[in-house]
Length: 382
Ligand code: SF4
Image (cartoon, rainbow, N blue to C red; front, side, top):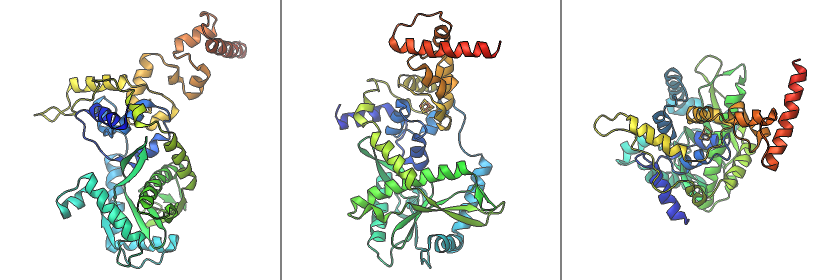
């Protein structure tokens, strides 16, 4: 299948859903679910995955309304007063001699207010313009850019990427800045949250480097040293730490290099299989028929249910599917790896207890392995 035909097939699969730019959070999440064609197709088709997950009955993921309100309040405090709190951290921790913030907010709402249009292509064009000025060393250039639209080649095709809340502080190299609302207590922030922030920063670094190369500059103009801004202790005062996301950027680069090409992914989508319009005309509510159509469309895509799926918005849907067929994947990735080609718990137990004759060499190996485990368990519990 040629690339254009593949893009058409994926656009047809998207059905009534609008195409959305991929967030850095979403691309970073791909690292937890390698090799799942279902997730790869949904991402490559730029389907709004949270809306799709809600339509097929998955509970909303992400932060509570309280946490979201707190995050917005903290971001406002950090960026208030001509970005005073942020500039202090940029100077102290990144060592940049920035005395004033020349900020540009390229979020859809701000761009729409200023230009009366806010489509993704236009915001990407504005991003290119401001990053070019930053790289050219123009003294009057913006030095803090928020909510830009970048592009990252995924499956051989540039995909729009919208970082959640990002700024680039520029004087010399460009440094990514992330503002998060989880606390840094006595100098320590929760490692899981810091690691998630680092992976998302790595997405921004790679996407910005691709832009920098397209603008004719050295990709090293984008530093892997980012500034993570957090609330200090239990207050809303800003503190920060430097993150070196070079390892995360290397891992993500390898993952993206191995990502299937779009034409290979599109072949997994049978002709005529498409997602519904998520809302009924008139009521604006999702319908039962739409939910069923979306579930059927997802079900035809091969999935790979693993321990990493817990962070995927479609987790509840895929877990219910794995339960329904008695998949060994429900026992965890370790058990699924031991079982190899044997896909259901029922088959695995039958092989372990010698009640089923292995029909392939792989099944024989699994039967021997599980048989040994069953014997050891029997001895241990005697
Ligand atoms: S939850 Fe489902 S769609 Fe998401 S990565 Fe896992 S198997 Fe794939």
